[in-house]
Image 1 (tube, rainbow, N blue to C red):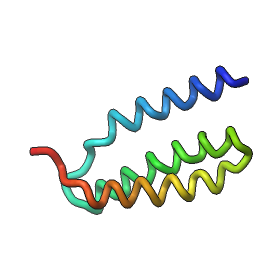
Image 2 (cartoon, rainbow, N blue to C red):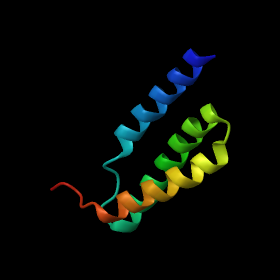
Image 3 (cartoon, helix red, strand yellow):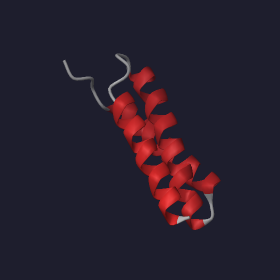
Image 4 (cartoon, one colour):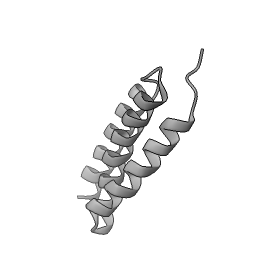
Length: 73
């Protein structure tokens, strides 16, 4: 079971890295970051028994980080 969770976490992290640079506007980056953070937070939260709380915290953190970062030029 632990290997399955690890495999899922690595897959989500990989998708997150592929889409991390999406968006030219801060709103686009906030939405992308929030979605990635929510998915990652749900996976991490499910390992400790609280996927909803993990999704909320991860989504908020991802949206904040996505909104305040500038795209590379």
